[in-house]
Length: 228
Image (cartoon, rainbow, N blue to C red; front, side, top):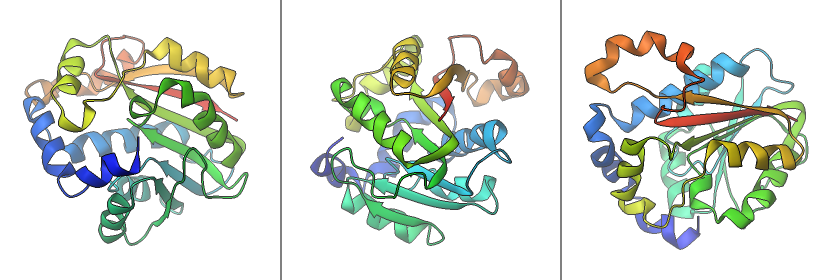
């Protein structure tokens, strides 16, 4: 995840993403809001501080939905791409956006009640994951939540979508077990895996059952949830 890489895609990101997920019958907004709703179900009302970090926020696809589904909370986004942040500021004026340098997060220790990380780490070299997770832990308040959403490499349709996506060409997917172990090694308590996003739009009548399928490693994505 480098500044030049995502500066290059900032203006075309929404269109490229929409083309990539068209096979599901949904738009990028569906998936962004899905994860904001999932995060709210897990953590809303139980944050030790009313502030949320959208880490690797890009052009702000998730930021507005976090504001919507965590009413009363401040939301801040950070990303290494200045061009992406310019778009995010225009889209979501109610949030704060700050540029990120390397793995450093530009906020004081203990500032946030929740760190939300949506499909970011597969763009980060795996040997830097420990540094990123340590930085996230630093800016969380005691008892704060870490929610990391990633593509599931066990789902063949997900793998196909990633391999065909222009801005994912350098991505390396991460298995849920490996990421859970990395989160634990960074000092987070009781990391747990929940699988999400099971049914495309033609099967949307089955989506009511998705919370009961969170144990099944066939979801298109998964969430690692842990506490500081």
